[in-house]
Image (cartoon, rainbow, N blue to C red; front, side, top):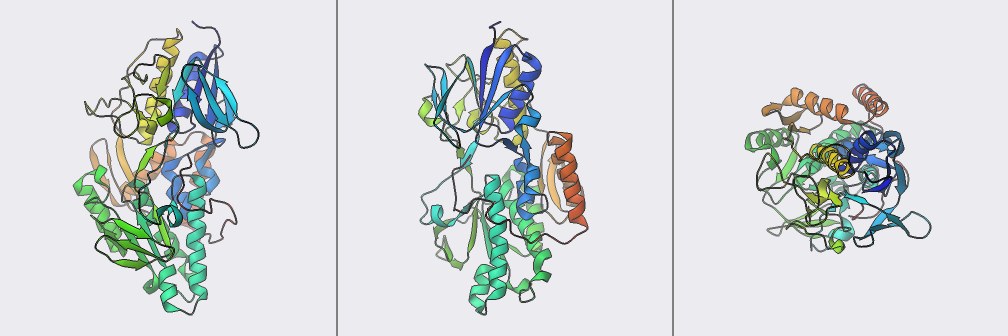
Length: 429
């Protein structure tokens, strides 16, 4: 075994954190473990829509890295370059000069960013929903629109400010629009000049169905729930232009709107392309079944940035889901440890436990071990699974208490000041 080998994990998401945690158990003090992440927490993304709606305190969906990683050095900063020959990673900290971190084994888990399209006005006027800061800002923005709508005497302006559009009918977009609508409806009694007649909700996607990952039947159930609540579903539709006051859809329809949240797809983190590592058509690093990057014996990759063979679907890469990323991280840790003389290498092998979507209002849809669930049962399963998947007992208790408080109290409609990214769609990690 290599004495005090340097193992560097780039990225503190599901894949990176679970890899580092398992390495701590497998290697103990026999290796120098380091993790690099732009923040000092792991964002628990499945609960981001509820944090944006204020159902959960935003800080409770951020899991402190130093709490879950006891023997790993945490370096806060942005990894901006990888030197494969020199075996270093360049890190840009929040303050101070750039620094180089050396490695003997490298695990790339930088995650993904919002996918960008050449749509006029997208970068300037659409809001992203990938980071905690963006989630907080979306909530602040929605509450600010209610305040301004309540204050105006112009009916057209009131309708424009009370129109909310989300692009992307996948998990993030569907859960977000459901949670935001629930927030606004419960908040309406605080705005005496506003009513349901003023509100308009749009969910837009180029795909022909909502939540295609769930399959046709469950997707239709989700569609029915959203439409019963008055959400307009525009499928097989694209956004052609975006301005500060309107969006133009395919077909030429122009809708006055001040709020457009973009959740339509993800792209591999910009760190990957300049490395020269082999990638697939989506820009993900090509790996073997042992999570090792093709042609690089000491470099591994997991999570959204990795194309790892999916045992459940031969010939395809594992999907970019949280449950796959954390299992990839654990498999990667075993194989990194084996490369250092501890244990035997084993291929990644995992078949998804199921897919669950929280539609707010005590409604959910999903599939658990192949069994379809919906309605109240789907909602309970979704919340229960997310609660159990949260790292640390303390975070689970805080989220459970938030849920209990939300059940019996009015929504908190206070804006969080300058917290949250105040700009448009970003490529932040």
